[in-house]
Figure 1 (spheres, rainbow, N blue to C red):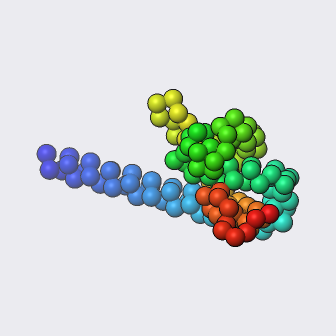
Figure 2 (cartoon, rainbow, N blue to C red; figure 1 turned 30 degrees about the horizontal axis):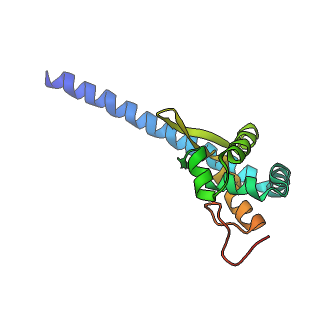
Figure 3 (cartoon, one colour; figure 1 turned 90 degrees about the vertical axis):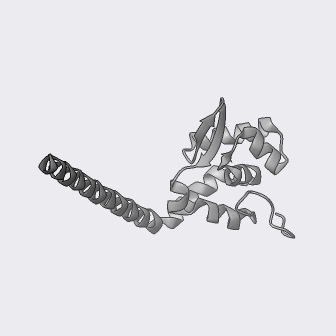
Length: 143
């Protein structure tokens, strides 16, 4: 009986070791992709300028979508009307940079895709539009 338990434990340990190795390779691929994307920083910033144009409202909605806010939560946070927020969320979802991360009780909570971290969209928008990371105006600076 003890031998069977040892064999099972060895097999389980091998599986865990293989899974850890796979995770390491996935992490390595993600890091490589991130560096490759960052190398084309200017190209990506031009794409972001096209998506956001001079739309500070769109940038604010994007920044406020932190995974804990619904459409109404974003509207309340930014003191905007819900239909305006909803429109911007749809545009950003079509552009592939926002998604509904969680859905609880029929309410969708909007969040940024991992691409945000990779090509530093939040940082770009904060600098471009003088906004805080939560989408609100930086105090004393308006555009």
